Image (cartoon, rainbow, N blue to C red; front, side, top):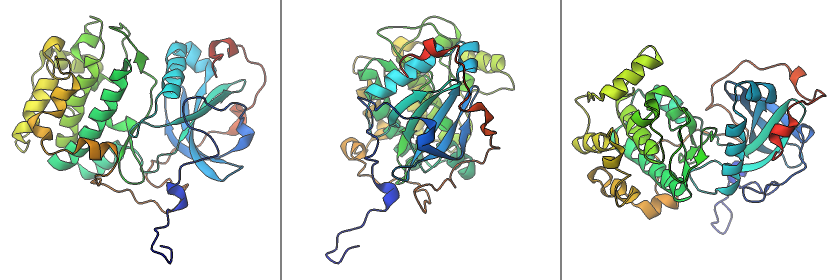
Length: 343
């Protein structure tokens, strides 16, 4: 605190001004501009690194995707869609994309570094969340999904692993690899088995209601510590989802149970969030009574978990991963460049 009483904001809480966020991404960056520090997460065809921008010592998350794997697994459309969607959105509870670039082997997305780690890790550590904690996270997610749906974007991958906590403990949704702009319906089978809505499994064509189904699954998992439909293999999970039998633990709040049932309604024409008033029906549900939606949007409501963060590049809230050798980066010859012209 300064002598006049003005609080000092730690450097890791300052917004990066060296690389502008969203809408009009800056071009011209390369790997040489960044120091790779450690892996934050891994995926099927890439991984996310904590990096430091050499010019300013600011820290960011760098998503590196192998072109050959993206093409082999037929994910080109998803990756290009992820980039274009993140470039046009700007919301407090969604991670910011700052710039993109590519080299002969990989495409790169530079994202804000969200220091608090995955909600998944905090949930596993706690076992399960209390009713109040779950309501806080669910409310922030409702606002984010509402924002996306207003722009005809379906997210399609809601799960604790894709929810990060910022330095104050607020939600940041990440990984938009399955997100898509959809006017009405799409037929692509994608997502995480435990979170798939019946209409996705049945290939009936799906749209925005799948995100509200996934919210119901997420609320259940936060309250119980496990999802409502699980099995050793995906087909077993799909059978249980289609059977639709919900078994609630005894400690569940009665209003939470009612909301979950209304979200996990197989008939999407009767699913909460897809009725006449849309997301307002969810926000006005009894379980959310007392939530200050405007205060939440302004991040004026205190979070139940405030991550421990000592400095800008602190990665203690993320799991440790074995690091790859640098040999893949910066090689010459690129047979896939035409697939990623927007990068």
